[in-house]
Image (cartoon, rainbow, N blue to C red; front, side, top):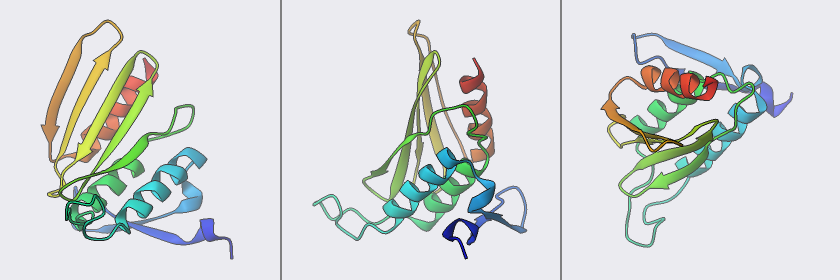
Amino acid sequence: MSPWALPVEFVDARNQWEQVTTLADLSTVGRAALASLQAIAKLPQGWDGRNSPPLNPAARMAAANLLKGIDFNGMPGPHVAPVAGGGVQFEWRLKECELEVEIHPTGQATFLAMRDDDTLAEGETDDVWSVARLVQSLAAV
């Protein structure tokens, strides 16, 4: 059995039901981003040399749902990095902007988008699906 056919569980934060998405359903870019997230999830306590906790399960689930909500076809993958305190950050360079999305240990997301003309958009939300839509819309510009 191919490792890409192994199921990966995502919890749909919009309702109580679980959804299962296979890695084969994700693009190559989406699989790479998910692999980076999984590697970060394996970091131990103190990974940063300052006793930072590992990735919080709520942040991991929100981050996985964010990746699940993005159609990566034709767009670059994010740089994925751990954040001290148990979160994770995604960074994209899209057509006319740079975008940073931080998933906090609680699962809440904050974002900052800066266009090449120096205009900014920022915010925070508990709804990672809306952040996924934001990523898609910025990638389409």
